[in-house]
Length: 101
Image (cartoon, rainbow, N blue to C red):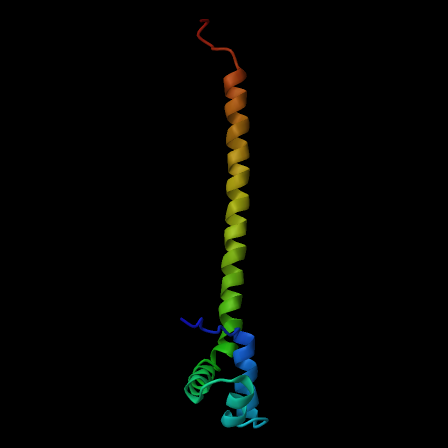
């Protein structure tokens, strides 16, 4: 059984950009990289379908950063509350009982 070749996303993008920009035709890219026309066609269609997502990432990234900031503030607040509770607990545990026992 022959092992399938695996290609990095960077390699796929490079090959597709060469075809889209006109540097190479699909036939030339196929011969040079030993790839079947079906593979090149699939890569190209995936590339073109997902091209708009490149510009959507900025919006999604800013939403994720805002959420991360919110979570970091929450962790900070909860850490402070925990430290205060530990301090209060240690103070109450160290005081002698008031009922004389």
